[in-house]
Each structure stands twice: as structure tokens, then as C-alpha cells.
Amino acid sequence: MLFKVKLPSFFVLLLFVCFFNGCKTNFLPVQDTSSTAQNQSSSSAPPAPIVVDGVRASYSDVVEKTSTAVVQIDAEHKNRAVDSMQKNPFLDDPQLRDFFRNMPQQPQQQRPQLQRGVGSGVIISADGTILTNFHVVEGSEKIVVTMNNNDSFPAKIIGSDQASDLAVLKIEGGNLPFLNLGNSDNVRIGDIVLAIGNPLGIGQTVTAGIISAKGRRTGLSDGGSFEDFLQTDAPINQGNSGGALVNLNGELIGINSQILSNSQGGGNIGIGFSIPSNMAKSVMEQLVENGQVRRGMLGVGIQPITEALAENFNVKDKKGVLINDVKKGSAAEKAGIKRDDVIVAINGEKIEDPNTLRNKVAGTLPGTEIKVTVLRDGENKEFTVKLDELETYKAQKSESNEEKNDTDNSSENGKLDLSLQPATPEILKQLGVPTDTKGLVVTEVDPNGAAAAEGISRGDVILEINRNPVATIEDVQSALEKSDDRPVLLLLNRRGQTIYLTIAPGK
Image 1 (cartoon, rainbow, N blue to C red):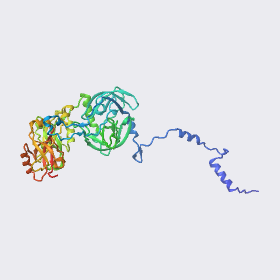
Image 2: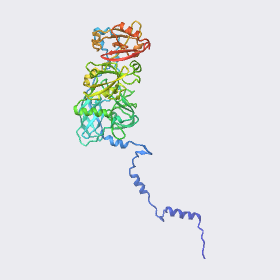
Image 3: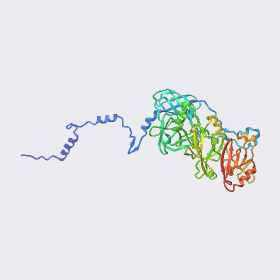
Image 4: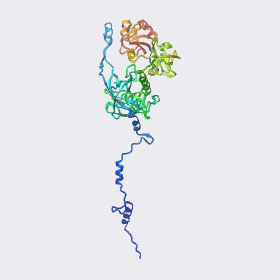
């Protein structure tokens, strides 16, 4: 007889669970996962992916490729005394003391500080050639370079160039890590960049940002410098000077040099400046080969085209560089270039501002012939100029620091709110102006008048008004009467340098 046994439902469920998961009695074997989990926990986690969903999520590959070539530079400097007040130089002369006695002594205008002391550098060849800033090693008696692995080497200066704020160092070594120089001309605004250096001496640090602008001139260096900066918001702080600005290909596209800051300590606010690699390469090659940098020179005084000047000189698009002085015997004079010409191109490349022109000419070797296109009386004219050689930096520095200015006045009608007197050789000598200059010296300026609004000050010498030479008060009055209500065009000389200004009467 067959018996049909009906098993309780809970027993069926128990058999089902044991079959698939095993039992504590090992009725069915169960895989021990504890050892597997332990092995997985003991192994290191995989690195974060560089790209996620087509978007770069890490720059670690670029940092690994570039950071070993960025070094710390420790330079021992001599202490330098800095004057905190700017004394009026005319008060030292008995003949001029009364003339300028009311001019107040003012604190010297402070410029944002360049980074000094501990800095950074970039190895650019396996033999130990290093690029850094001039101001990092200026006046140094001893230089020590520390690698990313803490190896240290004494360094010597191969050459330095204050005008570009660059210096080339050398350490003894072989097969050292180095960075290739990229083409900074190909850098675009918006490109992602990394800044690598040693900020505040805390150790190598990497920050990221973009190229914010190109062709910047900060004016933080003195007047004899040549600036064509890449601007970046990648955080740069004290100690980053001389460090690397690299693109995502790992190429060196800039040497970090300056920052703008609104704090006394010079902290980062996202406005940093790097010397483009193409300029650095040109300077480096000359320093390595010759120990100095040679630069071309036209021999002209220049200034930007403002809207008012564009109207006076018939410049329709307000682009170009106005020539306000041509030095005797200079390359420009020999070629036929004249004052009042507006330079619009060099070798067919458009020139839109003075900084571009200065860098273009200075970046060309002396003796080179260039094609200069100028706008003269509404027409383009081309001249072939064989460049002179710019004087050595220190000699040129004293000349370029001399500023020129321009002023106008009619003491009778007060049209420009100035007081004038004829220039004498004695006064001109003290003002730093050639003693044979014909013009009038500004003796008083109404602080609320039109001339003061344009920056005219006592000691400026007015040479021309509306392109008419002036040597007497009568000449000034005559020229002003002809100007009607139009802006007055002035040619001034301030301590040996000429400049055009426009003043709107009654401004």
C-alpha cells in the first residue's frame, strides 16, 4: 500500500533554504567569503579615473609629469634700505626753492611688491639649466636649489636680465627631470593651466585655473621693463615666483612672476601674471650664449591713441601708436619717420598699443631691418628701418624713468586754469629738460581746473598748443583763441620726455 505523506509547508521551506544556502551543520557546503573580503580590503583602492563621462576629473597625470622639474630656490640676499618719502628735488636748489616751495612732500607711491627671498624655478634641460625670475636671485650671494625629492645643489647664475625679470641658473647634474617649452603664442584665453611652485615656503604646491588674458602689462616693474604677461586665476602666492605655469600637455608655457593683491601681505586674489615661454626662451638663449640680452631700438617717444587724439590725428579706428618724439640721429629719424606719425604695423603685423610695439621692437636684434607702416596725414606710408641697439638696462633705466608732460594756460582768461612763465636755461636744467628747449613752465595749477584733471603739474613745460610752438604768454593766448570750443592739443615735456595730452576747456 502506498502512503501519501503530506509534509508541512514550513518543512518544505526549510529544505529549500538549506539547498541554496547550506546549513550550519554543513549539510551543503558554503563558500567562505570572509577571506575574500579580507584580501580585498588589504589591497589598495584603484586610482580615481582621469576622465569621467567624457569630462576630465583629475590633473594627477599632468602633475606627475611636470612636478619633479619644479624646484625650490633659496637665495641669500644683502639687505636693502628703502626710502619711505619722496622728496621734492627742486627744494635743494636755492634758485628754485621759492619757485617750488609750496609743493608738498608726499609719501612715495607704493607699488605691489614683487616676490623675493625663497622662490621657485624650472629645470628646462637634463644638464641642470634652470629658469627663474631675476627678482628671486637679484643681489644673491649664495643660491641653493632643492629638488622635489629634497636633494639640494649649489647653483650659479649663468645670466640675468632685469628688463624681462628672468634669470638662468645652472646646477651640476645629469639626467635630471625637465620640462619642454611650449609655444605660448598658441595659448588661448580660457585654456586650463596649472601653477606649480613653493608658496610661502610650505613645500611644493599645485593650483589650477585658466588663462584669463594675454599681452598684459602691469607696470609693477620699473619703466625700463618689457612685459607681455599671461594672466591667470590659478592661485599664485609669495614663493611661487619663478615657478611653472603648464598646460594640460605638460608643457611649460609661462614663468610665474607677479601678482596683484589688495592686502598688505600680498595674498592671492586670483590675478597672477606669468612671463610667456616664447619670451623666456628668447632671453634664455641669449643669456646662455652671450651672457646678456641685446634688444633693438627705434629711437622714438610713443603713447597710446585716445579718442581725443584720434580725432586730432585723423585716426579712424583709434588703433595704433602715436610718435611724440623722434631722437636725433636715431634709426627712426634716418628712415624718415617723424613726430606726429602713427605706427600701425611692423612687418605687416598690426600694432594697436605701445606695449605691443615695445616688445616687438625689443624682441628684434639690433641691425635688423624692419618694415614700419605709419599713418601720416590720413595716408599709410611704409619705411624700412635698420634698428639701433637699446642701451644697457641700467643706463637706459635712468633715461626711461624720466617722464614728460604737457601743460597749457592762459593767465589772462584762465581757459585751462594754469599759470605759466617763460622757461630759462637754469630752470630747464633743474627740470631735466634740455636747456635749449623753447616753451613755458607751469608754475601754478588750479586743483579743480581742466589741466589738473588731465594730470598737469608744476614743473611741466609746454612746447606746443594745437601743433603751434609756444614760447611766450602771447603765443599761448593766440593758440587758445583759435581753438574755439574744441579740445586743446598740448605737447609737453616732463623731465626730458615728451607726451601729447588733450584738455577740454571748462572741463
